[in-house]
Image (cartoon, rainbow, N blue to C red; front, side):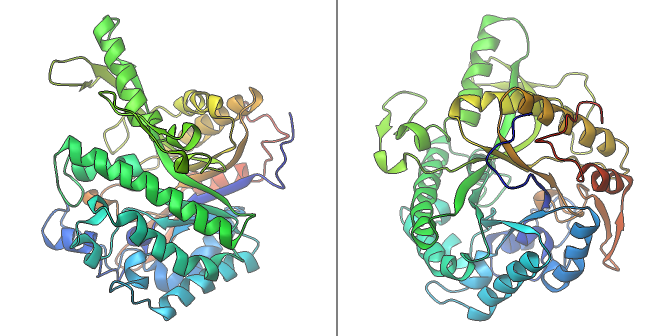
Length: 418
């Protein structure tokens, strides 16, 4: 197998600040919880108390034989009020990063993972025309503190999901259902990433910077040409449209009127890929309709389809960039499907690598059970089971499997027989 120009393959897991830290009382999601928007009525405090227990949790990472960890900083802790920065909160994350490096664990740092400071939410949030500059001011403040310990950066987690869930389905804050406003949000996120990219590069030219982009496989529900056309349309705008501006410098709109902007071009050093499932799309005059087929499903209700990771990786081949799998996981409280899910996912990854895809790392989602947004604690993604009353962490059977798999080198070993 060809050895790419990377020192090591990154084996890791991922978390996000609001989902694991506890004590995040100054962001839009805490307010969303107080409005009764969490299906289970759960509270994100104390979650996993990761803010205080991160050293203990790093021992879990070492237990897994992992050499990387993807996590996010909490903007609302650092900038509780606009323009006023909490130095002790910045120092907390500096200490987290330094401890990772001390333990030989490569940080993959996410700067924005869904949550917004309340002051920004009250100014219109991501929809505000000032959002790119406000985000870039935040990045300009924190990047100098982190640059010495961070090589891999994720500016924004799942921008399309953020726009879809907050501005189309209305399930995430601010609970809007307006396609035009969703496209404005996506445009602001494009420019926010581009500005952040330039700031980080200026601070540390050797940094490798991306977004974490969620891709769903959309297949036509039937052989009907209209279903085929609709599935292709959804794929283009859900999966591809957010990536192309960083390669072509063009924002493509559904009804034409494409917008050229060269400032967006060449603003990804690798592609951060989040992959979970696929859907079947049927045409209707009102728009795409997802058809539920009789297929194996996860606790979350979406299809169990780990082999799709191969398809998604191959879709990204035309972009000619290294790929880090920044999320790939399964909600499976009983851990019945997760061991096989891990094996099948890594077989799919290995197959794509054999066919020329340069995968630089795999981050399983998630290290431990955590607060799964509007689902509360009902969806258990963790390799480690968490008792949220006692904060005890217990390795699941899948954790023991991942511990073994993480000793392998996918650059040199074929994983098809694991």
